[in-house]
Length: 61
Image (cartoon, one colour):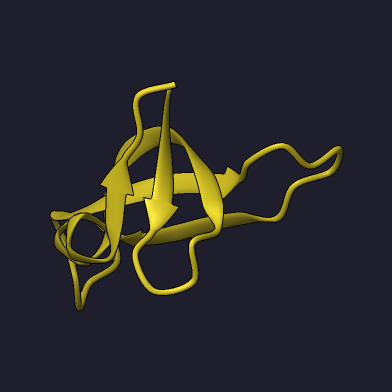
């Protein structure tokens, strides 16, 4: 799993996995499943992969 930094806020997130959106409107859309990094009970999120890659940068820890 990789740690990413949000380019605008500087907040850190852990990329958990990737998935495919299977709703009718967005069938086949690639998604990223990620959560807040370093928190005991982190909030989890999904975002379109292309948007995720635009807004986040991978860190080398």
